Amino acid sequence: MTDIKLVVFDMAGTTVNENNLVYKTVQKVINQEGFSISLDEVLQHGAGKEKHKAITDVLTACTDNIDIAAIADKAFGNFKTTLETAYDEAQISTFDGMQDFFDTLRKHDIKIVLNTGYDSKTANKLLEKLNWKVGNQIDALITSDDVINGRPNPDMIQMAMASFGITDPAQVLKAGDSEIDIMEGKNSGCAITVGVLSGAQNREQLQVANPDYILNNVMEIESILFQ
Image (cartoon, rainbow, N blue to C red; front, side, top):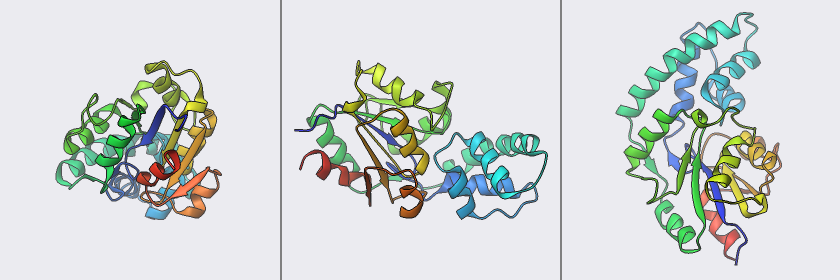
């Protein structure tokens, strides 16, 4: 029987299949400011982060513009409205087998928390499109709006732990599709950190953060917890 009492899963690319729509939108709004940033560059430097920081970090890493703050502010303003439209029009789904996986976790009294670099409005829109509800499919949702410090700081995971009276991070597993997800888990002291290949970053990029496991998808965690 596993000692894990809480799992904290990223949303896009980990539990939500949106085909990197958010990062394609980041790429779009940056390039509207006169740049030619590739999607690979966006994924490398922006994956998993609060989206204003993601835009800022992509611009910092990939351009030599000296007015990054002003450009990032403008791009982020455009990002919010552009992403809202994109999500309204897009087909968003979960990955095959996710609901059965959630059911298995809940049968073992493991709390399921989704956390994300999205703001609350975007994250809740995704839940609505999936017909997921807090208290049903998941136990809590924590977004970048809910904390002072986003990833890789431990604030969101610490909030998740506090929500369920968990004081020992050795009872927590963190999984996500980006290096910064894994760093967040390690900075929180999580017993297990997992990178998944279903989203933003590839094996080489995930390995930089030295996760305990790199899996094809989050459902494969079941074999780790209940082997």
